[in-house]
Length: 542
Ligand code: VG1
Ligand code: CO
Image (cartoon, rainbow, N blue to C red):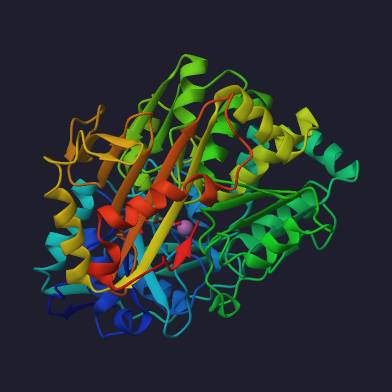
């Protein structure tokens, strides 16, 4: 039976950079999930009888939330639900299934790289029929609806068995439990030269993939080990756990430290990689070398022609504003455009749909292409493997060759986490108040050429998005960017992005922190970070 339940609005259901994220106990409040899901459906038109894809990253509360989504979607008249077995589907695989099966949209239950467990984070995100995150027009409508909602519809049917493939009927809706890996694996086979990668592994090439006890484990086992013949044990932490084994499923040098230490040691395999909670981020390491995500995007773009899916060339590249300009140099070399968008994958959707960009990337370990409409961790790993298999070159040599050709954009991001919200907003406002006076000011040898707040005009739908990060640009192409995170759940997180360009003839082999030392110092003094936040050092350096 379909029940109509009276409810009261919550005032805090505003989706951030990537969906609604809150602490688990917050989501466990009566009606909290229900209100948000009904607000999503109330903001959409024409889904009656259509298909909705539902999956999550397996974190704590995933199963409970999925049962609610199933019952609310059935009560609202969807024709079919495709739910990942065990409640699991990675974010890029949700995008793949939505597109491949012409679904109306999808709901992803994930807080991505945020920690999980009973006191950790949970999240909900809506993806549109093109497969990508809902654009701001829709997330704004969902938020508006959530502030006015008075009732939701829900079926009183029993819970659906999530662990067995097959179809259950809930009200007038067929709920199909699907294999989360199959469609995705089939898509990967169309893009990459699997035989060449098999040959690479057969030649003794060794790899470690750290799935961080998150959703990518089953995908990595199936594709890297079962399909491509990488040795058993290549994939570590491959079983998804509700608390990610007590770790932070963020594939960076701080939280994937075991992998990093191994790759810097004499026992290092040829290639190391990791992905995050929901499988859309990637970390790329070679023997003795970390490839920054910004460099990875540029190196993949320069070498993409080695993969069958990209052999015809790239239409364009897109990167988020704080991502380094390394990809711009490759684009210039290839004679294609490089688009600069605000942070968050939703801004790439229009460029991909319109065929303006083929590869996209973010400095936050996100890389992807027009094969889906999300960033895709394992895809990036497979593209790297495909390139290494064809070129038979080490990761370190590929990087050195790249920098010798294009120059090197030294890059780092310093995060100051869990700051007082007022202090963080005050810091950003104070930076904005210096826009008039900064240009022309010299700090030692470094002269400011411009200072502004990044604004984006979408060339496809004409929409404008403002205040997307404070940029301080220096003569010679160096840059400091400040923005506040839109995915954190405690206080404010200040992200400071620092970049300096070294031409091909320059000193290309420095440690990034050392190469950027002047600008790191400047990033702290210009924004008065210590005075305003009490912090003398960042919480995380990537
Ligand atoms: C962060 C990253 C951003 C990324 C977003 C979602 O956002 O900076 O590049 O798209 O997370 O990634 P913010 O607003 O906290 O800086 V995921 O893997 O958490 O969905
Ligand atoms: Co993620």
